[in-house]
Image (cartoon, rainbow, N blue to C red; front, side, top):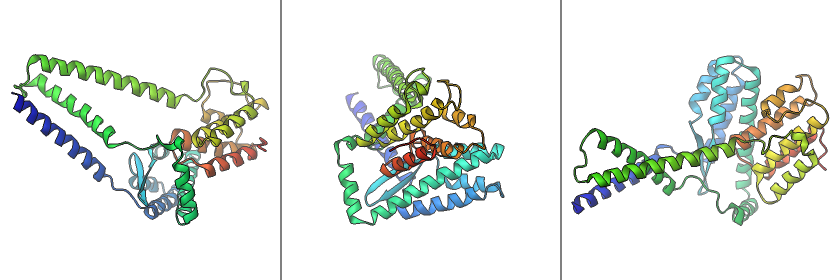
Length: 319
């Protein structure tokens, strides 16, 4: 019986490792040049959607599900595509001009970031500077899904599959009832814990205001000061996030709308008349927030600097 259990465990482990390896190889990485070429093609297709709506279908076909995976000089990068694909699918239903502008803005931003990185990767001094920045302690915990993470996911999937078979047949006669029920209890506890963690992380990601107060309750210079503090410690995503709310607080303090803590960024954008001189700047700020904060797009010093420029275009003095 012990030998049978040991053999079963070895076979299950080999299956997990092989499955993870297949997942890694099933989604090939692009080179940096291929990634830039793909973004150029995607941007051209998006620019033609208004005249030829079938371009949206072609664009959806070339944008991968999940993320673009890029490998350059031994480094792996992932650019999430969920937000972009969702906007394309919505555009195909409504042909909304505002959505088309958002899609073009997002593709242009990704293209500019990729080309900027491509130029910097060709300069040895800049590459050394980037390596020294990434070697700082605050970046030690930044990484994509590890082999252990993928193995954990496979363990949950395989455990649920095995338990399902155990209920409908006697596929594992070597296991006693105590072992089977023990595995069931462990599986239920594991799934409950995983669901708790997932819900908690989703809540943290989707919360845009930490408390039910108007944005202008915190004056815009305080928002901006906190954004600069986040940038100084290398937290570029948080810096872009706080800069956006500095602009919202600035407009709200000027009486652009009635304060309401329940609004979303898109609702703030719709409150400004289309003919307002501040509308283009706020639209650009909103698109950058969605790309960096919600879409998990690239964020660095250049992105933060561009965000500050957009804040100045809104009329908010940053110096």
